[in-house]
Length: 173
Image (cartoon, rainbow, N blue to C red):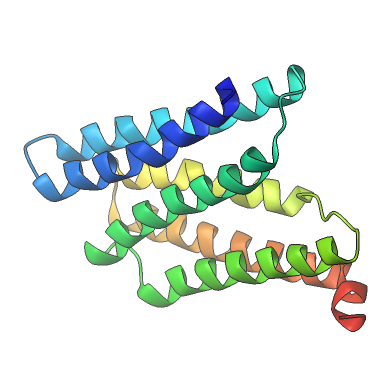
């Protein structure tokens, strides 16, 4: 197993620790969980750079890397729903978009086509990661609300964009 795949596995392994720290609830648990989240997020940046730079892209990495990302982000957002920082329907939008785009990519793949991450998807990912970090800090409720709306709206926009740009994939399915 190469280094990028090991980093992806590390990210997956960190998720239960991230959630465990939050549920343990000791003083400073939010900051400890935030540190774990940041480390896990950095492994995502690092594994991709290493894989591309040294041509270590594998089928396992293509599958596990995006899955690990979705698992980490979903874990954080589930916590926010549980603590009342995020409405469940907003998390549902995020999850539906992820499933829908993954499904679209599978259909395209069956037709020999690769749908790469678009600009709006990259903005959505960056905004989501930054907002999650901010939401773990002691911020005013209005800033938390702004972050939740940024996550929701960038998710909606990028999801719609994926389907509009690739409507031919659906039409030929």
